Length: 417
Image (cartoon, rainbow, N blue to C red):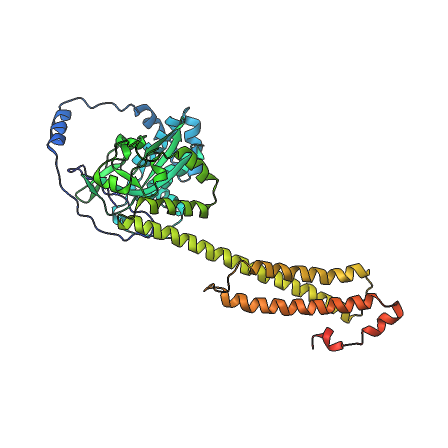
């Protein structure tokens, strides 16, 4: 994962906690003449005052005791600033100023780290990589009532696409989407050291501007009516092209938000495939999504199987309760309907188990064999319940004096021997 270098205006992107192969990237030392001239000119001028100076100063006054919890931080920022834009600035500057880039772990991958763990790590250690910066900003923003998403993708600098994925943020303010990169906005790397320096070019940036350097895996998060293709990003062709099919991204985002997590992943995978698998980062991201979908499918099937086992056990318990009551010659006395109700309940639970097993394929490599075995066991139990119900119907058809003799018939059937 990267940060801008001091001499080259070259950024290294931070590593996402996804299934990406870490690759070491050699920093390119390019010093444009224009940059040199601008630097010389600025050194002779009075330092410009940031338009955010007052907000920044106030934001950094947040009590330290509140900065170990995004809930408390969000509440403080919300009560301390009147507008949503000022609140997002407060969150951005606090993160950019307080969280230091974790050079020691810039290539450390944790494929299974949860969002909460990324946030907690950044707050506890005051260090992080891009995923920590982005998750922290998005979480605080959302808790302030400002819709925000973490955007995952890759970046370009000096005309070359980086080989390591990156994460940044999007927030919806005043009816528009703006983009934020608190990692790139926090400083740069020079001589193997992180140098804190706020770069407001990555604060509240429009999608059109950030598209020149940041490319989401899923084009939904470009926030453009005419999304840029992977090939165009590589070629630097990011200008508006109305000859493409119109993409109603506000409507698509609204539809996306109504989907459950797995359907969101399926929709995202489809869009990623449409864009083209130009690099290993895109391929790895797509594989990670597919793996998450497959894992969820396994979890759902396992849950169905376990529910079927639960219903089977409940059905057997109801059956055994009937057998025990039958062995006591239906003492104490219950109405006929209550007695039959015991077997009806048993049959209902067993049929429910069969129904749930329909959601598990016999060909399932994880549960297929178990399903076959459990289904046979359930069918045997249902057969026994039906025999009990047939016997009970005969029993109900007899007089009270004749019923007693039936308790001595087929004794082995009721004792289970």
